[in-house]
Image (cartoon, rainbow, N blue to C red):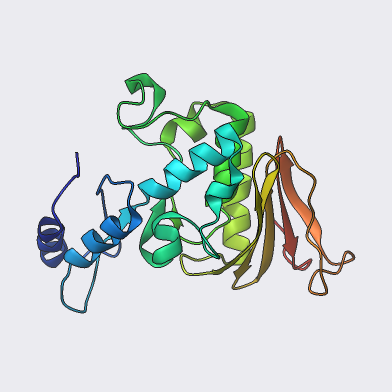
Length: 228
């Protein structure tokens, strides 16, 4: 199922003037989704965002199968995120992939630590991330607390849909690491079992701090004045 045609979304948007609009075009080809986004307003103007299915598939391969090289396409992120981050709505699970439906249109994440690693990526990266209801309200207080912490970090550091992303490493079997520049400071992110920490002249060990960590993920921040 591809979802609504772009012209239908354009019609809804013209009639309702939404602040934010997101549509579903279920396709593994990011360029096909970008083309759909363009079709939601063929003339310069308000265009819908779209769920980034190609990125979600890449995250599954990377986190569940440790194919971290899936998270780097040349020098950019995979999926719509790498082509047009302002229009990419990133996610880990939705009603089509969740386990209760047997992963009808995509294999469900195994939950627990793997799912949390996915949110460590989406909630610290550009794009417009969303959190699946079951992952925050039905997974237990520990996971809810960690997801809320990641959301608070994103807000505090001013990470936006178009924030600048630099991918440091994407090494199969080891880890993915990246830096994201927000309005209020910089984040460094590592996902995977390998050992990595931010470094370089821009990262003074005295000023950096670990903001959150868990099984196979960690997030550091470069702005000690921020309190979360």
